[in-house]
Image 1 (cartoon, rainbow, N blue to C red):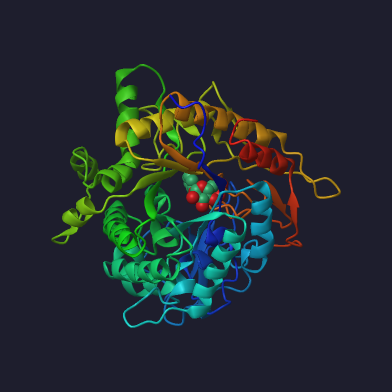
Image 2: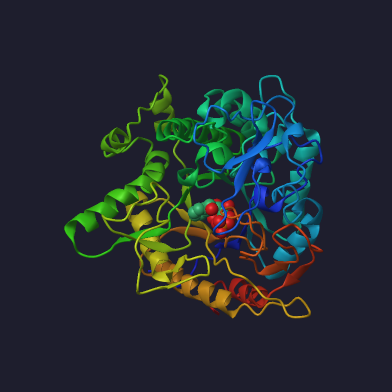
Length: 495
Ligand code: P53
């Protein structure tokens, strides 16, 4: 039995380009689907702005309905952003110009690992279509970032795809709805594996593959179950072939898949609720089952049949998925939720909605705070796969109130992390889970994916910016900064 975390445990923090990087029209970058999404709030959904066929600009709800009046982004994509609307991804919190400062702060906290994603259209502005040359300025940017990490002995953990599809691929191939996108993705992968082979040893193929849906996330025009699961099938093939390429080009690298796996409990001992919760959970586990084990699981037949989905596979797809499974399973864990047969569940997001749990408290955004659920999930996943796990997102989005010096006393955040790390430690020491590391989400304040807000903050570092993008972008350490620094320095002993 292990007594504590392993020596080489990867403590760190996590970010994603579409919410953190900015510089959307700098350095030769092409536009991405995320650049067309406005800000929103908990009760005002984010919208995707695109042009109507008649030429007028309009707004549509974030989940496209298949309305034929709505076109995807036509030729010359740059003309289609509405200057009067605020798009949080455009400048985000400007990692593009602050990376040295930010990485120095991560270094000061003692990070062993920093999770970031590549903006695909920065590497290939058109997504890597046949004959397209990579954008040297984009490649150089990430090289500089990784070299900066090395200065502080920080291992980059790089997500190849996180909530943004090159707009060109959305326009021409229906994003991940088209098989062509697989080849484009692989051209991008080959380029970055080759370029960064000495700098990056930890990779993740596709972020939260189970929550992806519609134009914003996958570049598809429609968001029907048929289109969604066909696109996911393309992602399974792309992910497996990316694993293959990665191992060929960087033999000592590890490459994982990533699924949102916040946990789900049955409401009570009513058998239908217990089985219902198990079956509902499969809606999320199907993704890791396919990518970790290498085949569509036996229950997937009834799962797709009930949704009226028929997956179109090309000859060889199943063999590819079988031959190149993921080395590890990365997952996000934020909360738990409760399954009840009479409550309509949000399909496959691994515990998004459900009945009220009277035993746990909630954040201001209604996310149940449940540290034991983290141990539960770690055990569930390790018992199922017996392969290394990596918690690549966890944390608490809150409204932080800085004092006159910009200092935030975020004792609630410290409490959240302390409680989760205690349970994570039990999973490692008592349950024997092989856990590679822990990278809390939004280690520096960044734009919320769900609402586009800035005020939903997760960071150890405060960034002076508001929901409309106003502010100095000044970085200030919160109280949790020094606390997390101590946790890392003692390898999780002093909490
Ligand atoms: P925000 C939905 C459910 C679970 C995780 O979320 C999710 C989402 C998308 O909103 O996203 C992940 O910012 C995601 C991050 C995201 C983070 O969780 O809505 O991988 O990009 O920022 C937190 O509070």
